[in-house]
Length: 431
Ligand code: ADP
Ligand code: ASP
Ligand code: MG
Image (cartoon, rainbow, N blue to C red):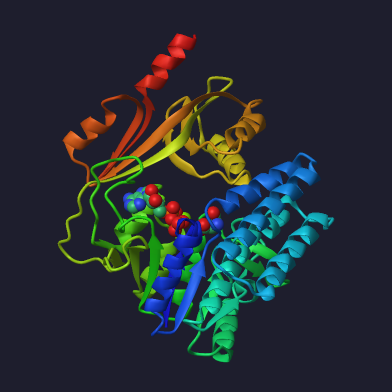
């Protein structure tokens, strides 16, 4: 058996779905399990629908869902899917989402998981119906919620490995060997059957979970890039493909924020020595990058990771006392409560500074909770730059147009929180 995973960018429109179908057909000699994300930016749109709901605007939320449904129905028409079963499937999913909107007594996070799951359910229905309409491969649609069981930590659910293994084996035994199985990434469900999600961008992780449980040799993730590159090609021009990379290096890169693979993906694969292959759906004959065990003597080029939207929060005590363990524990408690990941930190005598990703008002929540106890200052619009295997010239080049607010050098990694000089100029002009 083989597992393929296709992300949102690979199924944007009619032509890209046909391309995905070609890749599936070419490789369907082996039993194939295909994990698919939501189309394009559908998950973001579903989050927007939820934002309307939070603002008590049910009709706006529903109209957002209507738009999403229409997009998928239109995509089906563009692909020439004419079966009534397709329309019925999409409408059933729509009813499921409507039901979620009406359900009383559910937490915001529960509702989030019920609504955002819609993206993957819709996209997989389109691909499944397209594949069967072409009659070139047999296909079955698998609702992964009936298999991938998690705890009830909604939006960041943890996998219940044993329960999932039992259900997966049972299901695969019942399924026909020569059909391609189309299923969803990112989503799962609790033992009671409530929808859960594994964290944004979590479809890579879903593919890895299934490969781990099935003891496969490899799992292939098809992306819009040739493989793992020395930096994000959206931010840098001179990037190179890294043909082979160790699990360890890949874990480090993704932990530091390289957005190419979800950070949780690699560990299960490393535990069983399963190769992760990152290939381009734009160039399906190219080999891409193989992530596998460490090979002695491998030297990697410098790898650059940029995290944008960073804020540096500086806490000092109100009574000028030193920052001690009790303060740190209090501060971290609040970070944990708001599920904020600390990207970098520094402990001084009378202050403690933390660099975090500032999304969805999270920094605001921290200030609210702690401003009565600490003097807090915040610097926004920063970047966190991480350079693995750094070279002096590269570091100098990268920081040339930036003010470095803090820098950390640990063996083969340099990390710095920076502010673009342009931003500083703009600010002083405004002042
Ligand atoms: P998916 O469609 O599978 O969700 P993503 O968009 O999450 O794919 O990941 C692919 C993107 O990752 C690329 O378009 C690229 O801009 C970005 N990326 C960031 N860092 C790297 C890197 N070091 N190598 C390759 N791609 C990278
Ligand atoms: N659709 C989900 C997201 O956008 C999961 C994924 O794409 O991996 O976060
Ligand atoms: Mg992704």
